[in-house]
Image 1 (cartoon, helix red, strand yellow):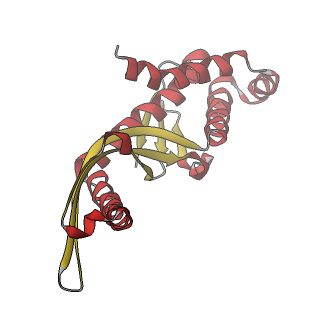
Image 2 (tube, rainbow, N blue to C red):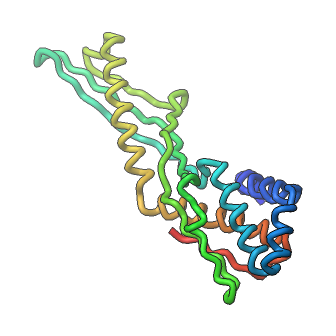
Image 3 (tube, rainbow, N blue to C red):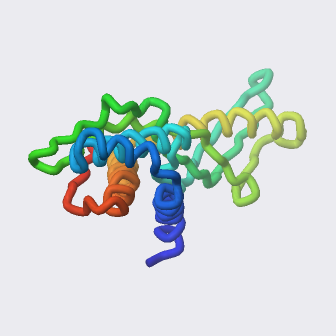
Length: 206
């Protein structure tokens, strides 16, 4: 298992341990009143939903790319300046767990299937890595540091748009959704196994 995958599984394992040591008096009372299979499973699902909502946003995927942009300016039709910028950045993908409610979780007792409707994937802030950026300046205007700074400001605005477009690509979004499905299915499956329901299948979809 790679280090990255281990980090992704750590919150899931921690969640499962927390569920295992949590008090179960309320769950036990519900079981006694309404029957083990029906109320035990539904109570586990309700507890899982509340635990996930407390997490707020779940990081499901990260994309690292490079924006390559350029800008050209002319002043007084004589003085010109150009700047080429290549800067790496990281974009994170999240699902907002505050949007997940118990109404999004349907338990088919007969089929032993839990269906979870996931919130949409959203993009986080773009984290540029300017210390790894490459900048090439040219033209008379770039003799002025103020002009260089202005060109850089324009280039970073373009770089942000370029990275946003990359991150919204079909392949990146599909990868983020796959990871979100795997994570959420694991979050629901672990407590079900803990209470002796490993035969209940969890299917998460968007």
